[in-house]
Length: 324
Image (cartoon, rainbow, N blue to C red; front, top):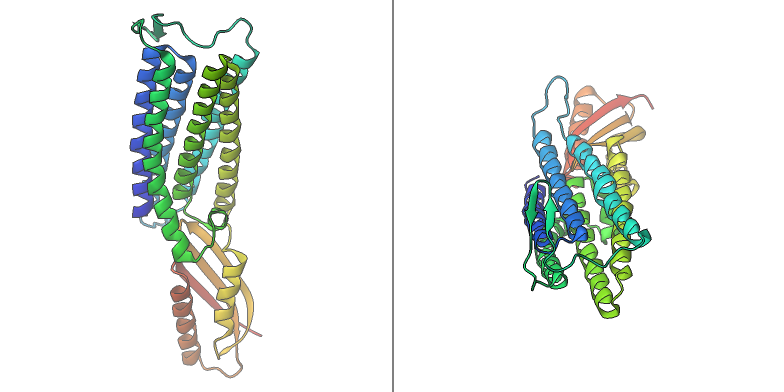
């Protein structure tokens, strides 16, 4: 949990700084696109707050109402983040780009020296200021902050990949239960890709003197955000509904049980995540005929120890003797 929290804190600091940077960029240029990006970064900052709330709740001790603890709260708050990523950042970016593309009589951006209105404030940027270069500076600064956050998230995910012997990020995305780190990594990655798309759009718009490239980049960013948000929502849904360990890991644990000399057969075997990196294992086992109660208790204890040693995510093991 400490690793996940440090990742979220890094993303919170980065996104907060980016939001401030983009807002000042808006005040200096009056760019509607920059204001839209400010809302995007504010949304990302709010997402990190939700992830921190999830981490805080998941650290609560088990009680009568929640006998297995509050670990699933991280799944819930990460799901909320995916909803906000889709509904606010993605949709607003897509809508803004589409409106700019279909608008008649629009212009490429604000005029130099034109007054900027925001809420009840009015600010007139200096006439000599080139809005385009302000946008470049802001986006490059945002790129630096997002890179810092991504490095932190990537390091934590690589640690988990080494711990679980996962071969690729695709496998980690499919198998991990640490949705907090997964969400931060995904959000930081698409933010960097979005910045690159925005920079390409600005460069093409400048080279061709045609704002359509900047507008298309906003649409692409919106579509990308919404696509990744749906993928994140799906990953959180499977864990909220009580997903089991991956099939290959489940088979490995079954083999450990079957290898015990006193086990005749496995009648039933179940696993379920009840929090990030927290698994419950339940098994109904038929022991060999004639096994005394004391020897059966020793065999159950040995199996529990082997299972927890084989998978560090296992927190509880329940074994029920059954007739063959």
